[in-house]
Image: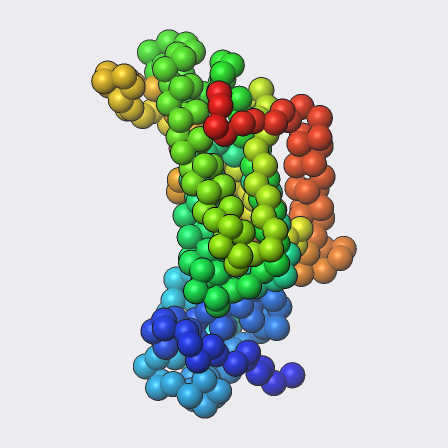
Length: 288
């Protein structure tokens, strides 16, 4: 079947290579270009998109850097198999906002990565390039008012409330920012309905999980590493959970109903719902 790209947005102010990379990336993520499939040639892509060959080459390099395609000398450019390399969260979050109803479930420590991934799609809603009718975000985080397996003091592995207070403040900062940015869209009349809910649980969160529109799941581990942090003016050596650069593994229902990817998404959703509905407790972001 001949690949036909979606029409590019004439009001898109991004560089041409970014527009092409975004279009091809969306086609790969929605399986219009499937794993192992060969992309059209540089000449064909030039004709399809109406941009110069150099623009197409730059777009393909970006897709290769992102891990979506692989170039095979003398053969062409192919869509990577999903198992070959983890995928990035950000493009899938932006793609989710092209739907009418957006749902994001997150389980982890601070929601810092999600906060960053939301900035571009929220900006696009503000300027009218994305127009969802509803946005629902649920955040499931550990209760830092009780001792955790980490962060703890490096010297003896002991709990220190100052460390928990620090993690609490980081979580509240990012979560409030997400809530306020999304709620503002409803106040401005740009999205008809928004809902952001936060619940806490007493267990240590050793992994992060995102379930996006019940279609895609991203899972990654928090490694525990020595770290130095400043708390109340004192530098403290700790064992910390480090999650900012965690490798995320992607699973999708688009892999097919009986596929491992689809089952992973279903199980991730089941796990999230089970914790949310049982030991999860509502948390007031404006209280303590």
